[in-house]
Image (tube, rainbow, N blue to C red):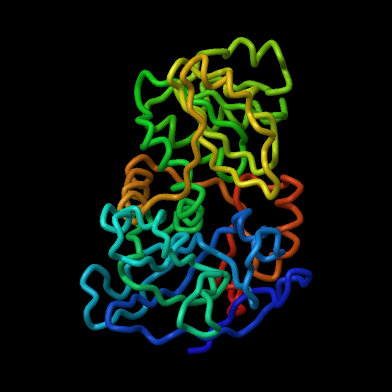
Length: 351
């Protein structure tokens, strides 16, 4: 079937309206009429060729929510009309140890929602900046929020799970002090989630102007990272730090804030590497520096259910599909609180 989409034909070209082809639903497929799609910094990196291997035409978008409009005959977990979501992956090998443990995100055969190899035309996946998508039922998620919250749920499919997964893996909860570095698309979700898990949340920002925003999101303390005295006051105090910043910066400034056996987890992905940390900053307190990416399908469903139970959604700014290029420039300038979301009805001339 032919559907309307927004994508780019080359890294040096603006995104534009285009028609793309989706497969008809197979035996285990779910067809979704997309209502909203979040705009992730990864979309920009990929579509502009800043990460190697972009396949064109590129239709980004992996924060997808909508309603089921058709199901294959062997689908059992979904029916027409269900509110659903699709995150960063639409396939995996399904037989490795990672897949068997519900950690499909770490499978070597994981297929991204866009820019992943697939038998479907044009030979790679095309994402959620489109009016419809067809996905195997294993990679579709139930959305249990109220329908009027649906647009603000979309970023949970990437920004939400990217911060939820390390918070859960490193046992965030009551009695833990958790630092969130960066107050943007990822960071604002990290603050909300860590607070809901019962942690004492310390937000770190380079801008004093973001103090009130961070407190409003749920931070117990806000530290301006350019203030040496304020940073020193946090030395050795944190059990966990989630670093969401997608630009190279000094990791040692934050590693020194960890307690003995504390862990700093990198979830931001800069286009150029961070400066290497000092080894003694790790050795002397048995600190750990780790990385984390999204989550598997079971954990992503757990995250969505946790957010529904706690009334957590993203802070968003809605845009029309034809505003996507402007939104990319604003995203680069940090001019968004805190996630753009495309109203997919505007692809069809609605709203």
